[in-house]
Length: 150
Image (cartoon, rainbow, N blue to C red):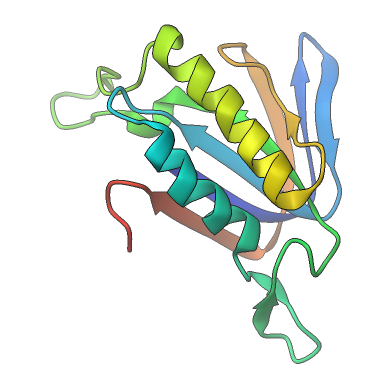
């Protein structure tokens, strides 16, 4: 699994012109699911996101977590995070999981985040054409990959 995490002061996702999910202070998480991902990837990634200390404290240091700032999460599925650009100029997506494998993991990831944060996770819709808006606070953007745990 690969996640792009952005600290936001607000974010929303529209599908067919209608807002499907929105948050104020919190994290916009773009989640890519690879064909080899399993529950183990969720068990590593979800707590990492829920507990990441990337919100500023009173000294301006990134020392507060989502819970510390009473923040929320907007989770968006994004298969393009596994784009291969090795050959030519048209990306390939053969590493991205097919819906039959990805959807159950995406839904399990939502449940894991809800359990960890004790909050409803705002979402887009798997496979939909979505319009995502955000105000990146900082900007702070972190990339996590369960196969490359840096």
